[in-house]
Amino acid sequence: MRALLLAALLAEPAAAAEPDWAALGKDATRVTAELIRLDTSNPPGNEILAAEYLKGALEAEGIAGDILTSTGTRSSFVARLKGDGSARPLLHICHTDVVPANGAGWTVDPFAAVEKDGLLYGRGAADIKSMCGAQLVVLRELKRRNIALKRDVIFLAQADEESGEPDRHAVWLAAHHWGELDAEYGVNEGGSTLWEGGRIARLDLQCAEKRYVDLKLVARGTPGHASIPNATNPVHALSRAVARLSEWAPPFETSELAVQTVRSAAAPGPAALREAAAGLTGKDAKASAAKVAKLAPELGALLRDTCAATVFKAGYKSNVVPADAEADVNCRLLPGRDLNAFLTELRAVLAEPSVSVKYLGPPLDAIPAMPFDGPFVEALKSAAAEAAPGAPVSAFLSPWSTDAEVFRARGVKVYGIDPPLRPEDKDRAHGNDERLPVAGMEPYTRLLYLLTVKLAARD
Ligand SMILES: [Zn+2]
Image (cartoon, rainbow, N blue to C red; front, side, top):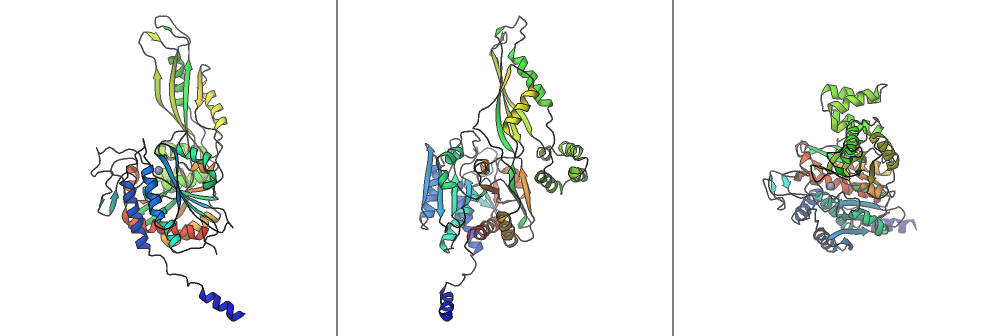
């Protein structure tokens, strides 16, 4: 019996050698380049091009997938590797649409995927077709190596992330296809991975993001002749409300995640900023936060809610008082903030009874920050030790928002892990000459593969 058991054990295929990481990185780069050449500028998106490409690429590997179309060419692609069901799924998310790129300001064709001096140029190279490329290769590799899984591994390449509209495709996906997407953990964009000296130098894991909220302020009054004083003039009322908004200073909040994020961003900065960041947990935390906000407004934004008036519309003729006036206000709320409580506070700040504040989106649940511990974070740290040795892994609150909230609101623990970018290229994601270091694709693909195996493979 014992001998038989031993024989059976020996008959198991020997643990195959490690994947060829260089080959995986090359493949992920090739897929990224092919995706860049499909013009999925949003609007209009045409993400069906990417969905069909990904479907074909995975079908060739024996992995079936579905194209999920909401309207016209607005299509996502979803595929799944089955596990034994003993743990809930892991969902890999990326988006296939990109912001528009007109050639002006670019030194290369933004849709040609030109490679030069070790950099891959193109719209979507950094945001975020490279992630789709790496995830596709991860799925393919799991299948080729026949890795036994305890949880399903799902790949969702979604449409319409860049629209930011309340009724965007991700909201439709969640409403109509939740059964295909529900998962325990998710990997999405939104983090920050630093490429320096030919290696991943640090890995900021996005655990929460500020929430994007569009509001419309509408003032209503009685229209009339401009020669007669008019106490209900909506242009005046709206101006007063927006002036109060501009002076509003929402209280600073120094959550552990925000403080950690500010401190690591401030570390390479000037001494005054480092000192202010160090004070965020002391007895003068609020005063330190005010200093941070003054020295680095982009870091101050992580410590409080913010609002900016962005569009002002009123009147049609210089001698007529109009019946109404409107302003668009874009707010970014801290994780966990209750939207209704925030709106109540905002109305009190505006203090104009004739000005209504409308939130046009779907109801929003408060979304807390993801924990920086537990199986996902342990698996990531362990994967990073192999794929990015020496790189610190930190919890990160992003001032920008992604579609993660759609999934987090339904209970998926979603974390953001971005492809490695050089510091000088970080701002190019929606700008000119968007690019990423080709050499970074190998450790990035390796990282996502190892994370997936550690989290989803059967012991
Ligand atoms: Zn993106």
